[in-house]
Amino acid sequence: MMPNPVILLLADDDKDDCLFFKEALEELPITAKLTTVHDGEQLMQLLEEAKFEPPPPHVLFLDLNMPRKNGFEVLSELKQDEKLSKLPVIIFSTSFEQDVANLLYKKGAHYYIRKPAEFSQLKKVIYQALILATDENMTQPAKENFVIKGDLETIPL
Image (cartoon, rainbow, N blue to C red; front, top):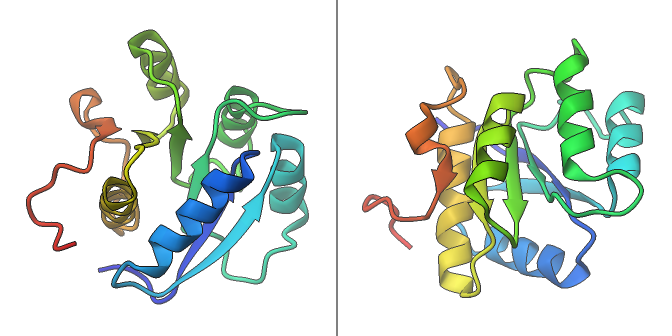
């Protein structure tokens, strides 16, 4: 069962992508509180100083190509931090290369989403990711289920 509200963090330097994410989230049948940061350094500072209101975020959507500290660096730091290592991390990137996805899986990311061009598909992948990532027993999935494509038949959007 999904928490109410779902506390989300989005780290993405593309302001348009952040806006589309926020709009897609608002159209989903869930209650969510979204905090957005625009680079990895800002994200790590926010998490380390716990500037967000408790409870901590349920899920982090992490872009790979950001200034000051990229998604790879952030993921490595998160997984080495005892307090933050359990935070579900969903890679949210415009690019997709299988080698990169394999590396991110090994580094401990929970899921990978290639940002879709269509708004309706964006809503589906975000919703699918939230269903999967807010499962109370969530662990890293089998490698073949790492990439979220928004193709679950059960998503009523």
